[in-house]
Length: 305
Image 1 (cartoon, rainbow, N blue to C red):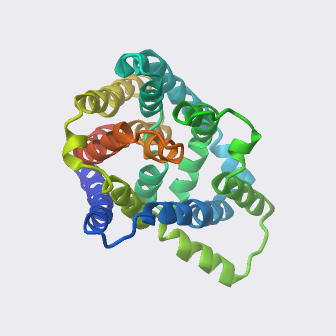
Image 2: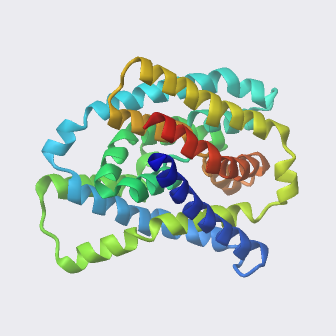
Image 3: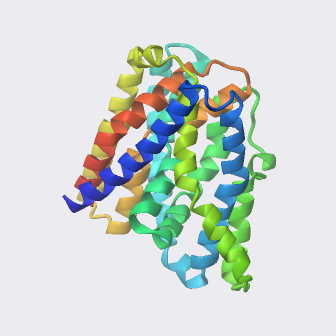
């Protein structure tokens, strides 16, 4: 019950932030471009500060060595979700290549970044977030190498896909941490303070994005509920049974279940929108999964921990 209470309190806090963003958008308090502005602020400033701050504090040779096994577990769970995506994605799409990319991405990758990072940080603090960021390294590579091309017209794998603020800030944080470079107190305070804005602003952004759509239409899409049944209930329960049978240690079990149980990703809205494509499927998946996640995420994590 303690785990359930901790998770549900964090989920409710995050959902409240989503609701704030949703209301701000629906009442036209924020301009039409607000989602793009907030997204840029998150991706170019706040997330890099969060990543640099976390890796600077905890990325030592000892910590990296002691957590290297997390990479193995990450690749293993990613192989499973990607296999499910390749198997079921075309069935959900019904012959539509664009929809197939959306469904494949949603089956393979969930919101392990915005919501996953926020939950880990809120429940266990920066040290556990560092471990979670190590765990999600292979997943992040998969997102840029394979996931983004699935949901972006004309996007192909290449070095440029990794030249983004999040990836570069991770390299900077690793270098600063390993070399133990002393930073002035003003800089470390600024990094910590800006990083603290990550969770609420990320969830407000989610609400703003969802608030741009006809909510009734999003709720009426039947495939959304089937997708959520598979991705947020069936797959996590199957994974939980397997890691319990294999007696996977507590920390990697937590990381695996965090990745498996999260609501669906906003990238299925962001990248198609950037290419002028229909974002209705992604918006429906994001809206319903975040609501359902208020129940499923606490229950599944309480069973796992």
